[in-house]
Length: 52
Image (cartoon, rainbow, N blue to C red; front, side, top):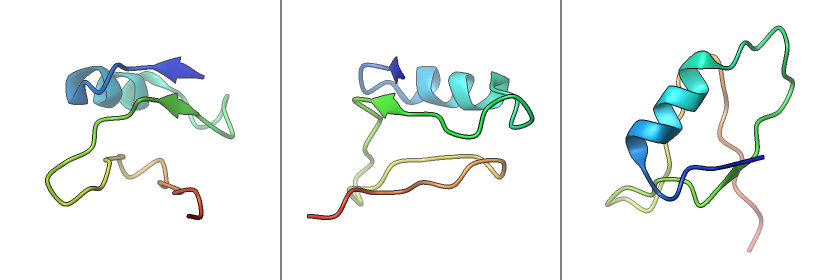
C-alpha cells in the first residue's frame, strides 16, 4: 500500500516503476482524482473502484 497524497506525479511514478511480474496488486491510498472523478493507471495496471 502506498499513500501518494493525491499527487498525480507520485501516482504515475509508482505505477511506472512497479514491475507487474513482481506485484499482483498495488493498493494506493489517497489516489489522484481528476475532474471526471476518476483516477489514472498505465497499460500495465487496471483500476478497480470500490462498490458504493
